[in-house]
Length: 260
Image (cartoon, rainbow, N blue to C red; front, side, top):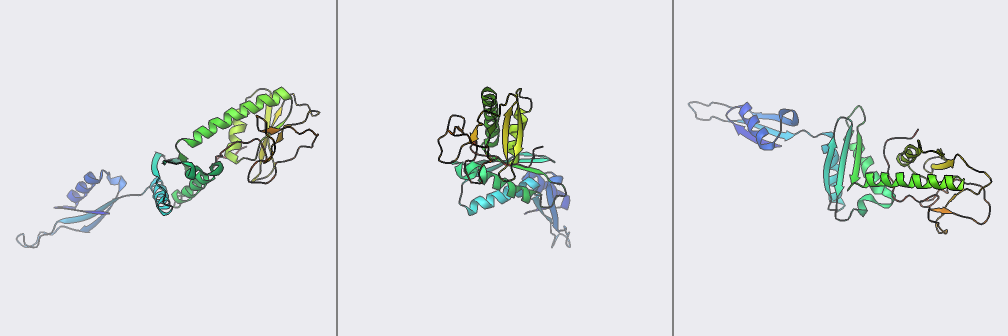
């Protein structure tokens, strides 16, 4: 909070708001002292007020991130890209963004989860908070859409089902949405969290064909991330491991929306 003085309380407030670049709705104002005239001008005192900016949900999230990065000794610039009644978008910028995104986006997802908790601490209704890093999430979504179409075409061409690796609800929703109107295939989710995964099934599916199996860590991979086994095998759900288990998708996204 910063203090301001003037002949009257209103003058002190106007002086402070102008200097801080705030409106009355954006400011927290405390009157410290009322003005006094004194006796014949002796002992007269001006009005004194303190003014500070009211912290919004987005401000609290930014303060949390800045404090966290200071503790971790990371040089990261934080910026509020959007702040509405329903949604907050915060963008992170750093010389090296890898530590902020983490393996398969896990660090970025964790930061987003924590910011959502901080921003909604006093809210009755949940406000969605998105933490992005140099447009990573949009690039990731475009990658998922392109991969979904590529694998759908392969499923139709081979008349085989293709099993993807386990994904979070947001990524599954992107795949389902992308292929919802794609002629010749349908998608279903199988398995249980956190290893729930999508299977792409072509309309011309031939059960006698060997399905595209998810590749495993250390196995020989083909161009589409699937594995061809020389022996017929029954289709199995991906193993509960930290890596592999399906068509590799790279860094993941995690968000509030859920699939149908």
